[in-house]
Image 1 (cartoon, rainbow, N blue to C red):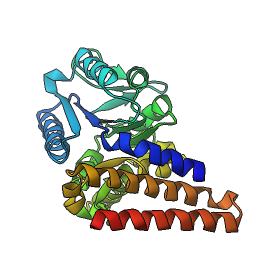
Image 2: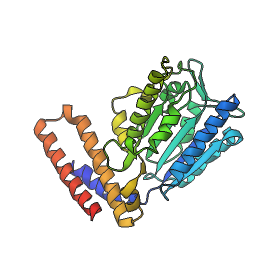
Image 3: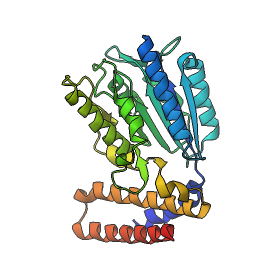
Length: 298
């Protein structure tokens, strides 16, 4: 653990200057209502993610722009610009299909498969990657997209849940509602946004007395999924957002997020560790976290 903390300390300065690139793809709606809905959701994401942090770049490909060549060009740009310390978030909105073996998102022209997306993503060096596939049949994309440094969130648990989804609506709401910040540290992570949107999606079907045709999943149900998702900060809010504008405070915020990630990872490993060793490492992390928070609060 001392070695891990030392490495985290060395990375803090670099991560303080890290950037996040978000690529939002809004596919075909098929009907006027869906076309308008998908385009509106994409624009909402553009406004929300693009206005909160100067180090976040958002590329939105919606309607006629959501063609294969434009999507590939967006990933080529990310591959040329992003470094290992940077982050990449990809959000897919629209209709998806699954033929039993291959998932595709419906876009103008030739559709793009999960394998195509994975190939594009693999070329991007960003050490933290997040894919939020909010389309129908999105569960069918998990196997192709999953990778150790990549968190995959889907609106459905399998490729056979083919009805239009509402998950995207609540994912966007999570980024706008402070209630999504479950631990009240003024940083909304992918895990917090997922849990918020998952609960809202379930509530939607219960309130409307409808059989749920979508069941959101995180990393296909992999046990390590929540740990990885909890380490992916989507946006900062409140006083933390203001503090991030100060270079010195920003470095401390990055360190705090790293320490919180270390604590989550340690808790995940608890069952396989001697109790005394677990308590020792946890106490050291909590003390470092408290000192870091005190510096932020000055």
